[in-house]
Image (cartoon, rainbow, N blue to C red; front, side):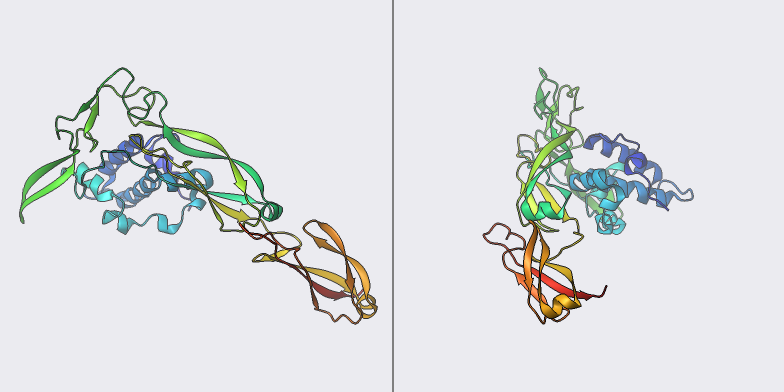
Length: 335
């Protein structure tokens, strides 16, 4: 059965910010958590919205999902057992929802925070990998809100110290349980762990300090890249917070196969058919290379399956000098 769209599961738009996604998840989790709802299929529904939340709350996973859909998400990207143990902060949300404060959460970093890194898989042709080139791509990402400058506050309004936690971003609470008194430190519920409260939320970003945009970028592809090569574009990841630097964007190369050449490292391999007469007496033939056809002398007495080398006709060494070689495998054909 096909998986449901993550955005539809949470009931949010595709350009929803993190606050909207978290708010939608909390509302649905309260409704479908098995401890709160005993109806049939509740547990499965809860797992679905939990999976959707983990993917969409992680900038890198969300970017892959936006680009490739469910095919861009690995099985390892979501594990419900990890979620139940709080592997990505799930327990913090559930403790908050069901009245136990911040659960296992602690103080959020109040200072500048670096943005998350992003990953983009770029498919290129065999020739582009061999010779290099430029590619334009569009990346969905969160950028600093240009209206509030990332503060989350509507221009002209104040950002005040949170009176609940006195700017610490965390509060302590005690609760009597059958096992004794339980004391915990949790993110301040009033300011969300920021230590600051905006007087009026920015009208453009709803107080998140970020807006989701499609950014157009030009990727410089160096000659010699291969499938799996990672290219880093510094500062092109998710926006930072509170003046922190943006993360990086990692371009993962995926090279299309060639109809003539096979690549092994920086060497190329191809097959060339020759006749019995050509193999016996020798001949001059045209051999395909990356730059076009070149003349090659087949020596007399060539045996079927003989391999010849064309020096420096392979792929350019990545970030280095020189090229690999091209190997020609002569195959005997009969007319």
